[in-house]
Length: 109
Image (tube, rainbow, N blue to C red; front, side, top):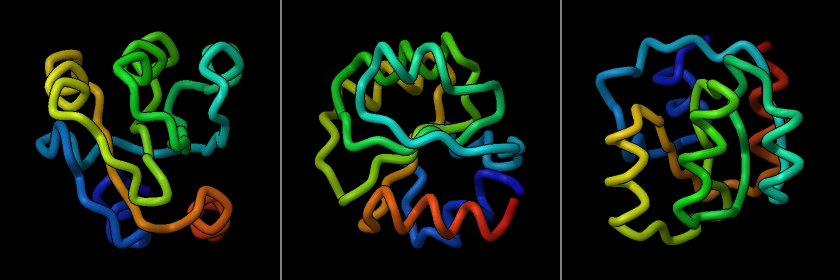
């Protein structure tokens, strides 16, 4: 599945790197603890979190996540989206809970 398809299914907005909408999503990981996400997110995963600080970009880069899915409609500062965009990290934002987003992704994988 592509990031674009994922955004459609989650009724989400692509906030950064919209030009990478054809990137493939091959898995999913749900976690809000950044240090744990750093060791568990696999390349190609959609990482679902409610974290919105600038460190989500660093974790996504380190793990080669396909995208970061910010759940619960959490507010993301412009400085975070700017940093993520400059690092090539795709962030999408959904109003869904992390659980519901993971369930929808699971149906597609």
